[in-house]
Amino acid sequence: MSDGGAPAPQLAGGKRIADALGAAKAEGRAALMPYLMAGYPDHETSLAVADAYVEGGADLIELGIPFSDPLADGPVVHAAATKALRGGATLESTLEVCASVSERIPVVAMGYANMILARGPERFASLLAEAGAVGAIVPDLPPEEGGEITAALREAGLAIIPLVAPNTPPERRARICGGAEGFVYLVSDTRTTGERKVMPEGLADLVRATQRDASVPVAVGFGIGTPEQAAEVGSVADGVIIGSRLVRAVGEADSAASAASVVSKFLAGCRSAS
Image (cartoon, rainbow, N blue to C red; front, side, top):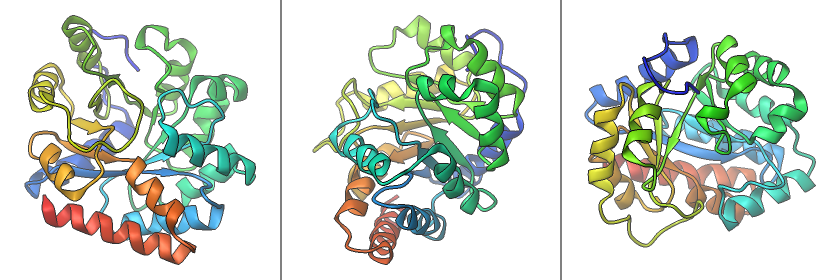
């Protein structure tokens, strides 16, 4: 993640993201960007769901790396991470999921700083790149503290996706957006991930303000749980990220095939509603 200032030269990962989101925009819609928790409820289902996302019309996949203390995630995603870890999920098995689809769709890995530091930033970045990932989201890594992690990811050609939230001061938001790569991840509200009955009041104005600050697309995540909400957010944002709703659907399915079918139908509904 850049620490702001002049836009950084476009990385290979950032270009692929730009191409995917640009293609969606050319079709007159926001990009559909589903989240997948690797290894949940098991590795076989993860592979099936990733494939279903591709076949169901996703434009980019956010791939969660299971972690024991996911501070940005609400109960659904947290429980999924815990179950995945108990089932033996690792960074390596997560990257197998990435590699299974990364030639067909851009994959952005989502993980926390401790897991990167434990593996070593250069090794972590190298593994992501070898699996075909195009970028990374590190929610507990402020841009100002990116240091060796940011340097290693950029050296590997990976875009570092910055997050901004409703409580990000405008001056700081502008600084973050000014140096953003790939896209800006706009968190819809200040709570952890999870489905909401209604999207926050004022979200559209916040999206527009963030778009004015950024030279890359702005995608909104947190809270989107229905095709109608996806359409509402997609009417103003450049991308729509759907997490907990899909993770819940996967957990409620009784087989890998059933999970794949359910998420595919949900994505089709989102595409129809947009």
